[in-house]
Image 1 (cartoon, rainbow, N blue to C red):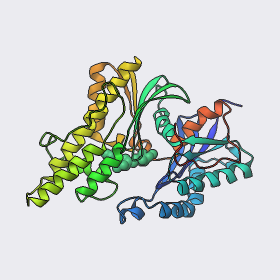
Image 2: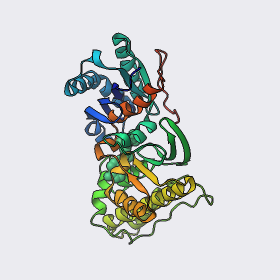
Image 3: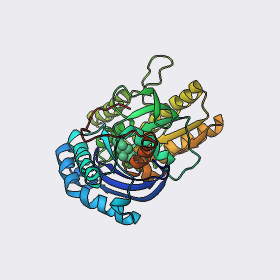
Length: 337
Ligand code: KG4
Ligand code: ZN
């Protein structure tokens, strides 16, 4: 075992085929992402069967490119890491099967990575300062979690969404507003010309002190607002709807995240996941953290959305713990952190 480790990460849990080579969990030597967005766009969302087939077509080339770009021979790798949970089962299986065969053929250790954990580890990339303990909020298309990171690889879930993930709500609201998939970026763009205080959409009220989230009520309120206006033949300013919805989501996320920091007595906080690309959300967190004296970490946008550098980073800490998988490794579509 050596502390200096070069790890190949592979990610195929949803609609990105990705491979990356990362040294010691923080230094990215290459990061290749083939996004299937254009393929799924015409269906308005990810079609699982098409996702699996596309991963099969792309994975060999994506891994080859990652090794070439890094200037690393496969034989020089210290380990092969792959996302095996959670995600679309057929999509996960492509990465898991590839990684098992690749590791076996090279006689290298295999490391299984949880996708939510990988999103958290995106904060270590290119950042020597981000070290546990800290509170992290993972906000993506599939997850909305508040997590206390005790130490590398040790997590305590403080709260999670009880229904839709924040990104899922963005995607569904986008569809209601007639915007393209993926909806998050489209809603953010439209919201730029809207008034965020024009409509007061209701926010879910959970039990006092709960750090869980619920976005389905807010999503339904937007859909009802649009339907009611349509039936009444009333014109709607869609930019105002987008901006008001976005404000409601951001306000809830910031409030619960700050509560979580207070509860843990922690003054370091990290953002993660695709929704963390949102500029309004980032600005709101910068302001809230500044006011509370909390140090804020946020990965670069390329490391917020699905990528394999975060998988290889997460695997590094498992590598140091000798936490390896064997050839019985399987995909776990609902695997929890
Ligand atoms: O982390 P990610 O790439 O995949 C999952 O693990 O789900 O996150 C994708 C999600 C999508 O729901 C997308 O609409 C959302 O992140 N997203 C955004 C923005 N960019 C991506 N949501 C709000 N604002 C954005 N700028
Ligand atoms: Zn993700």
